Image 1 (cartoon, one colour):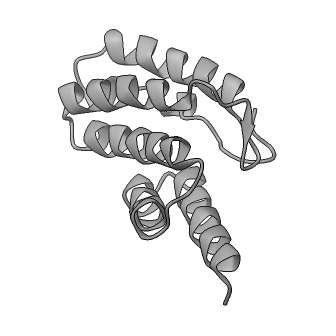
Image 2 (cartoon, helix red, strand yellow; image 1 turned 90 degrees about the vertical axis):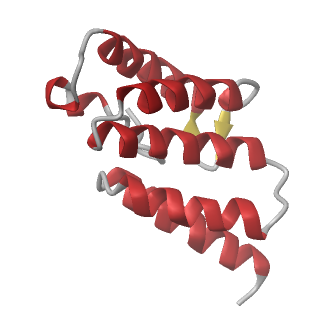
Length: 124
């Protein structure tokens, strides 16, 4: 398998895990991608990792970790428009909605999970 195929396979696997709300496995795939390959868009990949881990922390009721990583991922996405089939401007709007929800809750039990963005070509 070529490097490009391996890279795409890891990215797509992470995307599927994320959209299935399996955030830990999404972060694992993207972390492999980030650490094994020196990509031009490595900041973007790091942002996806941080976004995923934010939701891992949320599921574990670690609100401080969830908020911190959500804030960090926003910085990584700046400067990207459409990247790997993801509309980053729409993603940032979704992240703002998640952050607003985070700011109004004390526990993951109160989180509105419908605010988690879907990533990819059909991102809305």
